[in-house]
Image (cartoon, rainbow, N blue to C red; front, side, top):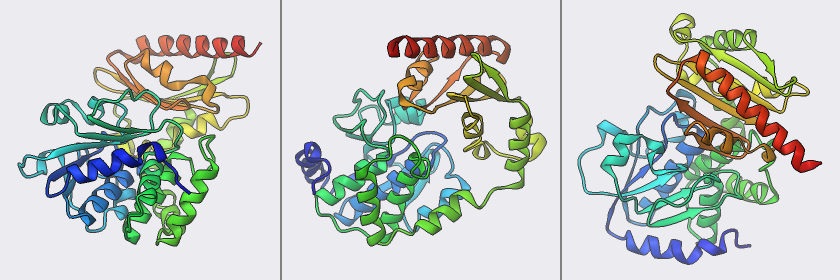
Length: 332
């Protein structure tokens, strides 16, 4: 069964173009399981084809995701030895998702593999499928279609990426194809139990304290259909947590009965960061985030906005209430 027929020919052309070349596989800032898993898997497959590929990310690989790397050559932005390399972006909705410095270092990306609905294609060769749950799903399908053999480390990276972006196979993007691909990945060496253990059973004490503060700050807006929690500036130092520990916090706000959208706002010195999570794709969180120069998925998006918490909060509430009203009107 072919999964991505529309990409097959172009993927073969890309592999041919990269023969005997040097490549850097780039992921986005504050990477998650799909980002790192996609980077690792693509890098390892390229290396298996005789291509000199390495991974690079502007940020450190989160503690709970390091198990995916294995012996894959993986660098921070400023650690990568100077070399003239073709740049391939993974899980990046736009050219700037890896940061302005990376964008300046690699101004003309050769290729992009992604699944974000806001991606309009910023590379020379774009493999963007917005119907896929994860970038790792796109890559897994491409590798299977091309009949490429890969090792258990690659299978684990792809499986974990898919599991992450499907919310442990709970989100609406979870499809028949997702389960078919994951079954094949398990057959090739992916270990679901290990992925679950590493991602969800190695919480730090700092994260639990952060969670306690976040839950205590939750506030209902838009007639109880939006739930917003705030992490004030300085809270990470106060409780001994890191930014990595915010992963999954926003899901607690969304999980409340009657709530359609959960929000996590992080207050910073001269800006705010917000994560938006909706229970249904019709709410188009990527569109709401775009109003504040952000982006992402239809049901999961994020933004960084230069404003104070006091100034940003009412703007966001207004945008979310307006979006809920638009969806309600479309249904009536």
